[in-house]
Image 1 (cartoon, rainbow, N blue to C red):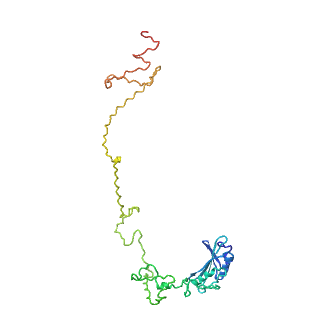
Image 2: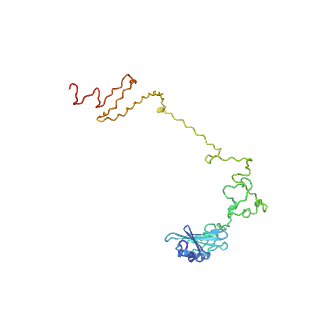
Image 3: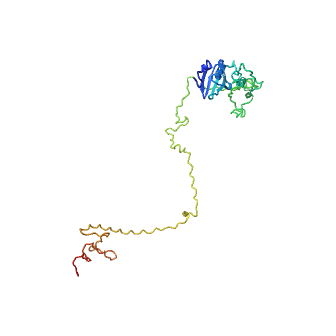
Length: 345
């Protein structure tokens, strides 16, 4: 089954029916003899009660392809396009006005534009063209007489009458005959100039093949013997050697602000003389641990030692401070302990 058909196309539309679906459109091709039967099945079996349009297409070498587009509206929109082909020599198809009354207007237009006959139609009177009009304008073999007497609008091609040069033969669009074969100038125009024959090589002789590569250039670009062409040393982003970068724009002058601190005059500053570094003081030697029974003086540094014999006293004539004995040591200012004997006791 194809598309939304409940059964095979041949079972619904008759023998020889072929169905295909594309872009939500179901298309069924039937023979001309099954045209009315196919429309009846579309209306009664498939529920296509809405008749949309009917027209034809001129297919050169094949015939006129007549198409009818009907739609089923129950349960959603389902579109069906029925097609059949009639030959150019016997362009006739039974009328569908007995099934779809709206087909009467479309069959009149198709008969007027293509010349397809619809036997049984109530009246195939002209619909769009005047009664004195001859021919069917939508056929591919219809002669566009207006284009024979008047040139195509638009810009002229090179070599036409406005420049007086040689005119080349133009391709005629479909439906436009040669003015020398049809129209008021029939047989009065000179035949178009014959084109010169193309030069052909003698049988068995082939033209020389190109032996140079694309990097070598053409045969006219020859280099001096023993000289190799210079290689390109610039990258693609740098461009060619002739493309020199533009000079950098000069920086704009800085705008002076009179009241800015950096615009005020600065007084010269003199650096002071470097002061002499005083001699580092000698660290006192670590005091020896007190003997048993002696208590060290808390928070007092060891006294400086007396200068040895022959050494000069400290600067200023001052002698080193006298050694202060620790507690418990004998000395000139020794205070006797309680209970010791002494003078005046």
